[in-house]
Image (cartoon, rainbow, N blue to C red; front, side, top):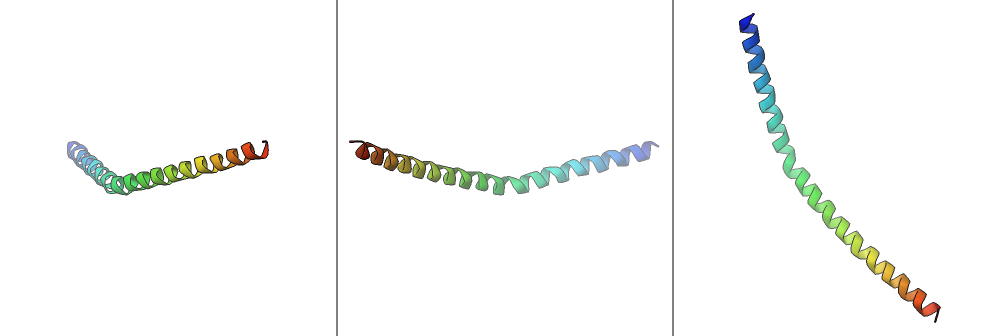
Amino acid sequence: MPQHEIMAGVANLHAIHEDADMMRIGVLPAFVQAVMDGVEAGIATILAVVDALVHLRRLMFVNV
C-alpha cells in the first residue's frame, strides 16, 4: 500500500508539472490576442467618435 501511495504522489506531481507547461504555452498567444483586441477596440472607438461628430455637425447645420 505505501508503494502505491508514493507512485500516486509522483503521478500527481507529474500532472501538476504538465499543467504548468500547458499554461505557459498558451500565455503568449493569449497576451498577443488581448493586445490585438485592445488595438481593434481603440480603432473602433476612434471611428465611433468621428462618426458621432459627423452626425452632430449635420444636426447643427440642418437646424440652423
